[in-house]
Length: 105
Length: 416
Image: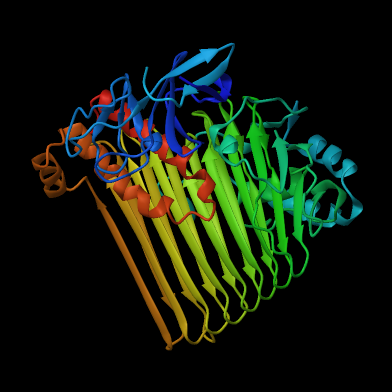
């Protein structure tokens, strides 16, 4: 487990993603109310940026071909993608968003 | 109340530099004689103005608006300028010594075209302030000057002026974001650009007005020899979002590229009047606007590419594509060419229609549900234009704003 601070919660827009590079990871961060979700910023189908997708509840729709991924599990809910994308643990500590770069707990 | 009448004019005149008095007086005389457009004029066809400009008042002081996602996207800036209710509230200091920013009210200059119509007349007479962005010859700036233009006070009218002078062989990007509060108000932004020989201007404007705003904007751009401009226009907000655009390709070898995106919903009217004058030899221009309308909104595109008699070896094309997404929405598209020279390559194209049913069927056959298939098509439609905007930094927030409008229309069952 190694947590790194990546941004302030206040810096994240509501209901849309932002891209952030953490070491070698390309992460798409989403804020929904006061919850933060992090998944790999690369669609498992054609490598589009998921941070630019639209958010529906706790799912994000890939902007290029419309596959919908769960922000909680990383699994696709619809074609054309069939494989999940990596999900990262995030937590908010005193208004700072931290990401676990040591893999899933 | 600073209504647009004689006493207000005298106050504005008394506060302005003597060098502007003659121009202001002429504009005021024209304004007094001018009547509100009725929709019978060719340049106001399809537009219904339900207010009298002469009964509106200038704001007495600047208000304030919250943040804007479009501005937040542009993090790397040469300078930030703010014009609120026609007052320059933040003059900005440029990070590049070759790009200077000064106050219009401290110069002898006025809006670029004072005779175009009643809004232009009023801007000449009553436009109190604005900014002048000057790029010295040879400047090579790649980060933009950002201009935040806002209106906050219902019942008022303001005339923010932005003049951009690009010197010989200079290059400068400018991003202008227009926005306003929710109430009913009128704004008539006046943008003037002069690009000297070999200069390059990259101008991006976003109309993110509030729902009650009537915006009657002007852009007048004049190009010297081998000068070029790239203009990106994004029309999303306003009860009326209008752009009266004129580009004069005066210098030999000059070129312009206008790309535009608009998306109307509710009862919005988004009105584009585009004129490109080819006067120099070997000039080229491209005008490409793509828009969507839903609910009972309307869009208007009238484009005129005019090739003057001596403009030999002109190359030009204008395209306007429209998606009509709801039964009550309308898109008017009138591309025109006026060719007075026989050595030219010109073309124009225009389409108006719904999302293609064949494309929807194909995507659904690949496992996308109908709503998702529609969204993929809509995004694809706009992506071509978003990718060509001169300020790529704005792309994420523009995509999001367009998608948000479309998703709202889907959720409310308005996509036919």
